[in-house]
Length: 112
Image (cartoon, rainbow, N blue to C red; front, side):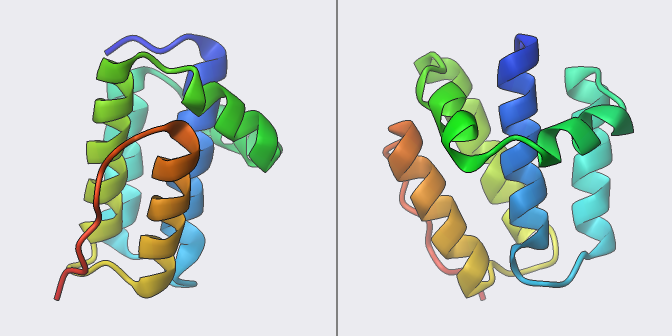
């Protein structure tokens, strides 16, 4: 899936936010980010830039994504949230907010 630079930054921002949401960075979450780095072809400098993207900018770019990219993003975020074996309540809240703001009609079920 090809993302333009602004889309890529917004995706990295929200993935990074999900990783940090529960206050614990699990090695499996880092692995998911590394996989994303290879798949979307970016390096750690983009992560630093994406961290500076404010929420409104991020959601603006996510909302404009075509449906196929939104579906990819939804699956990606769910994979990141589940990487440590469960979806923490803070991760679930962030996913629901992101899905709603971006117009993604996905329901996140709590994983045990």
